[in-house]
Amino acid sequence: MTPARAETPGSLLRSEAVVRAARRSGPADAALLDDAARDAIRLQEEIGLDVITDGEVRRVAPPTARAAPRTPVASPDTRPSSSGSRPPRVSAT
Image 1 (tube, rainbow, N blue to C red):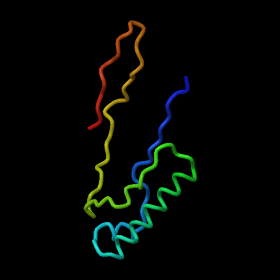
Image 2: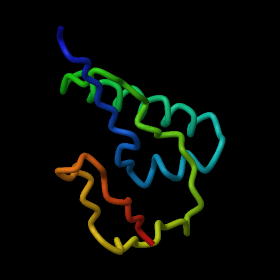
Image 3: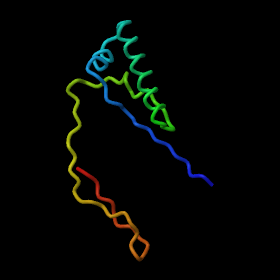
Image 4: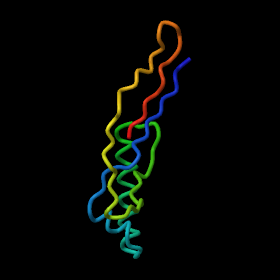
């Protein structure tokens, strides 16, 4: 049996023009976003991804939204021990 395979890039990098267009709603902005989505799809097809998305080019995020850096408390070891039990997971804070 052949194993299933899927790859999804999520959000692709966007130019400043695409980011600005995503925040506005004019006809020219819609055309620019359509072109950017077609480019994202073409890129993924050319490199052979199994799962194709529009690269989230229309995604709007607040201009000041930044992900806070996350520092792991500890690196969890999720491999089963010789007794077959797993250690508790440790989450990042």
